[in-house]
Image (cartoon, rainbow, N blue to C red):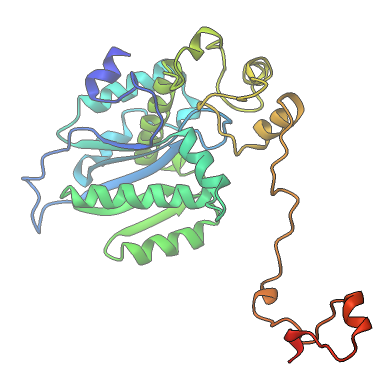
Length: 307
């Protein structure tokens, strides 16, 4: 934990709001019109889990240093042990003259808010926006990026076209399994995975005192993890459901809340909204209200509304 804190990652604080973090940047004083630019990779960690943050990361290095990077042993973070990931992550910190990295850590509460709001904001849209913002942030730091490799979210061709239109001066490659094809994407994958693991391994609950009643054995966060499913079953509160660690927009969570939490009936849940046309069609001018007995007996009298 101390190593991550020394880098500046806020893993000792409750993760309620999403944040962006930049490691120290390579010196740009050597860059000029003739100097080589930077190659940048983007990948994520934590897209599928029902709990914890989703982290998008960039890693970028000088074009002249890319061959050296490929010899460091970077591979898809999911194929490496935690120890191997940490070792490679530490190696990145020793090469700051040539390599930089940044992350966008999206909190589970922000994921829930985006996906459950009235105007839906999908996980794909959230991922695209995080990637675009990270690339823009790197460019705004003065890093001259010439090529970008990205692990796809959705159809590669569509995503690549979208990014190419946004960044016309950069050669962009979007591919499936890019983290196993391009070492710079593998390095980004490791930055994302190490950051997510650091938050989960030292999770700080935003709800005061809840850690006294909840186990920290929530596993990897994937619905297929037995430790995660057990924690979800054992940790549900009848009234409050789950703490902010959970992504409430996941079907795994909503099903358990429906089965095990108190039933809630919202006052307007069954009220069908009026058709929009009802607000634009005037009411009939024919008065259909029944006449009173007094008026029926006094035929010479008429309703004022009919005058």
